[in-house]
Image (tube, rainbow over all chains, first blue to last red; front, side, top):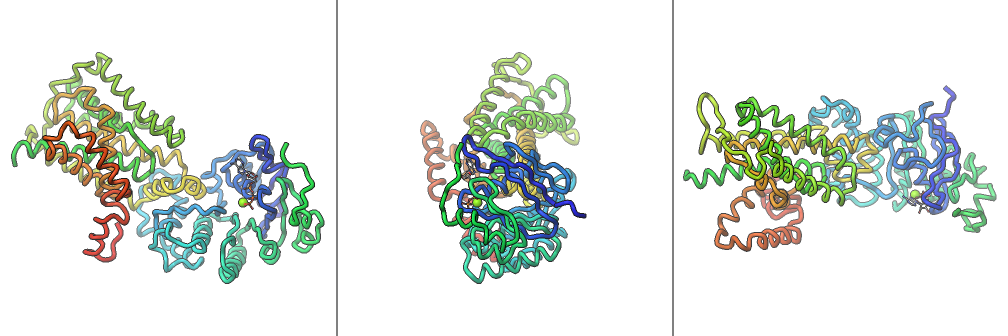
Length: 255
Length: 294
Ligand SMILES: Nc1ncnc2c1ncn2[C@@H]1O[C@H](COP(=O)(O)OP(=O)(O)OP(=O)(O)O)[C@@H](O)[C@H]1O
Ligand SMILES: [Mg+2]
């Protein structure tokens, strides 16, 4: 199939006079790693929140696999197989690491009233959650309370939890930020293996170098607008991008 | 056992049942409720009316009582659970006052006179009284605890815990906030209704003031003192809050002062409650029985 997995057309989100996202259009192709770049406050996270249903768009459309998803509630969008992480990590702090992933793996049960009463203690999902933890390198911490983990592990937990939901599309919001060099390398390898499994990945990244190395294509946002789109080498050469990153603010921002 | 102790034990058991219900709402699903006494009252009035007006036995009326509690829980839960947390506290207080006023002012509910002449619970041709009724209450307490225990290991419970911890993240993994908050709310109100039915048949006379706002506060104190979100916390809390006034009977005028001090001390020194995570009691228990974190 050639239709893109996710199609975003004319997407806008305004907060009062602030145009956090302003008429952005782009596609996510099946099986690619697409990077969303841009300086602080460019509107990257707001884009994620629009795709995952946390915010309703002011204008524009989002179609996932041909189905309109703008306006759907977050839990419904998750049910379509779209998983996401949070830039400011949001663990279920007083649950264990395993329970955090399990709560996400329960997605198959939450829509069926009889199934929600079955026990998870001996379920297949529990084994799947354990293997997800293994995959992100947290299996030894499965019984720790999530709230007590250091940031590096919390970022892994966020990925495991999102993976438990993501059958088709995984959204990663700055999964590398605050991590040490060797941790970054591990997560990079993890993201590549996730793609190798057939998932499509949209990731937000602040660090140009990491994004260039990992992504097939890049989209650069600035002040809520799309500044550039293309292969990493093309984007790096784009003058508009260099300008935005060096901070020569020319464009009018707030209305 | 002396009649006094049996009466005290029965009241504590009933309060424990109701507090377990509140714990499902507050401790499991993380939704503040300051109007739980209203649902206790709705159970009590439904049972009392069905017994005195319709002549139903406690057992025949029980499914109706639970159904009514669930229905009204759903009815009041839908609007209240959509408001923000701080409004939820106020909304639930409002529900408590409105329900009390309805009981107090409508002839149908006995008005200011309340409802009297509620029969004892019959079983095997016996009229349960004293110890027998206490055993019945304890039986229902066990049933309620089994439900709570099952919640700690089924998907529905896990969804509630996740919601309590982080609503946005919970929604992002497919947990419908409205559905699971409502589920916790309805389970909690059903337990309150069950407690109410037992209370009505125990006291055999009920009045609106039995289910006023201060009872909601004291129920919440039970949950907080014992340990929100724990399995045994509400029971321990019901025992402590139930026994203290008896022990300190001479200081009855200072009761409210005492509760306040107790709550403040708890919040300062054991915010998770006596049986909460990292509480002194739990650390001692953990030492005695290595391994478990239940
Ligand atoms: N809920 C909100 N209400 C009002 N303004 C918001 C809200 N969320 C985001 N904004 C604003 O929208 C703009 C874009 O924010 P966003 O979080 O998308 O930036 P970002 O590109 O993710 O930046 P960063 O790299 O710092 O994470 C910012 O100016 C931000 O202050
Ligand atoms: Mg961001």
